[in-house]
Image (cartoon, rainbow, N blue to C red; front, side):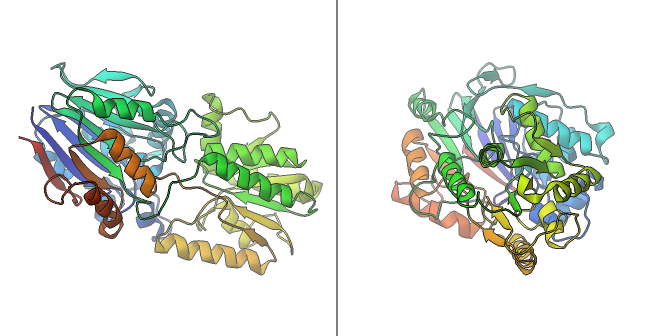
Length: 452
């Protein structure tokens, strides 16, 4: 069976992920993401109102025109998890393909919300949404020779999977995004046993496509339970403070948000989740049963509701509350940035604590915005607690373990630029792979023929 891979997006940057795999006459697309940094550098860009071609030209979503060079019919569009760099382009591109969106339950709900927010292509979107749990499989195409399986992985968002396409030539494992977490907070550990089995079954693993975000960092990525312990220690250390304590983290990181909520209650403060995306992710996770927040935890996304909540906090006393807000990257319109600029009823005073349970994404736009946000907070007297976080991506030893478990015939680094690929290339070469033979460093818009 002919096996061909189109590397469409995410092979020159971190963001706008999209890869297509053709097995015979059947094609599966993995991820359709947005490159948020390409959007943030423009003022007041509303992507939901923009045409896909304009967003492609901007470098914000994948240029999927290379799909016309791929023979075969698209049978499924498979986002691996609910981060925008993996689902953000679904409302712009998915309607071009007569194929369902197949994903884990939490990811499906987030993708549906993305489509509902769309204004430019909402009328032409009629793709079905199909839920599939980790551990389940589905047939691809009519031949009966190709099957897709979801393997549970752990990441900085719940319900993440790595899809595996089983073909007569061997398995194709799409390895974006994960960390090797054996003691997560809300979920089961990563299913390494299944990965090892896939590496030994049938013809083994034909190709492994891997996220290289932290490949240059030594050691292994710590568990989410490590971040939880650090967070508890930090909050306990300031529980006697009688002023304002504010926390910010990735709104999609429901495990982290749940830990902040728990520890806020432990020190006698009322947690309140503020910001549109905070309400979206936590509300969806609670509705689907992934998390059970206390009944008195408020979630407010609308600007007027948020400001009313801030007024209530100021009236009843900041010492009684712990707001959990958006804005950990210093996004201009996010809640924490507005607080730093004095644009909300919440007054930050000398000695107030701001907990950043997130690391700044190492990208110039984010770094500049985060710096500005912190400066504004410090000018008002805020004390900053930073780096209370663990990454959602594998480091060097995790990558080594995955290669050892899967023993792939071919490896394709992804989710980085050329500089970011180099540590992974060094690791792969140390394990016997060779550039141009079975280690394929590629670019957006390229085709790789694995089996002719």
